[in-house]
Length: 360
Image 1 (cartoon, one colour):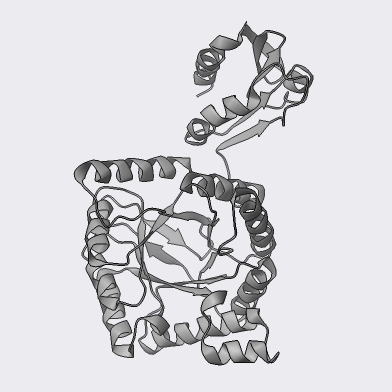
Image 2: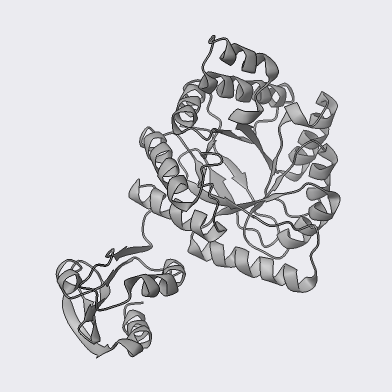
């Protein structure tokens, strides 16, 4: 079992436990620049963060490439309960600037922010403010000597990724700082899995799982699912991010579903829906698109079925707490396989909401 660290807990920010048997947490990364931000944009960002939190997201990381972004991240951190991580490269002073806000964690690599003294300055500030540090190793940014060993066939790329993480960890251990989360990512599922296995055999630092640059929605979800399911089944992994060339909300939904199916997240809404076919009497795709986010935000444990026709309706969906299906020109709503309402398709949303409320 890994050691446990906590992040957040300052101001409005929720306190989150990572590692040590705590539930596996779910992360995403903000995909837009925050260099320029007026009050309206600030409120919009806070609203979107809170919306993702309701969907199951625990932590959100922001890129901080300049001091304007650092200042704005501090403003955001004071208005949301979502723990925020500042992603810093090259300039250690950006990390120090971010620590003026309610930042939950700093992502730095000692290897790319200059001298040991720079790292010590960040560590000292994080120690004082009780802020965690995340080390992030990607397969594309290995030290040159390890790249040469990989090219010469002396070690595998997975071993090189792990060794890079070990070198970064050693810097923090020299400074007697252990409030650290480690991330080792590759765009290769196999390399990601092996690197995390190598590390987990020797160290007890909490691990952040991710397949970097995993690709668009479908390909990225497939890669992440395979990597995460393998590692989580072995007890490896304390927090995850599904990295997609898609919206943040899709990363959250995908991660939540992976954790649920791997038995690492209990409760919540289980949404089942048919793929649709020529028998369709109801626009399944449209209904799911309208309702998915709203359903996932519900604080309830329910199975919801959305079916295109009566063949897949109350029959295959009879286990659902509530379901909806097409029936000729109408729509039926059913609960545990029993039809409770038959209405015109145009009234589907309102009727479904009314019946859903009765279960909440």
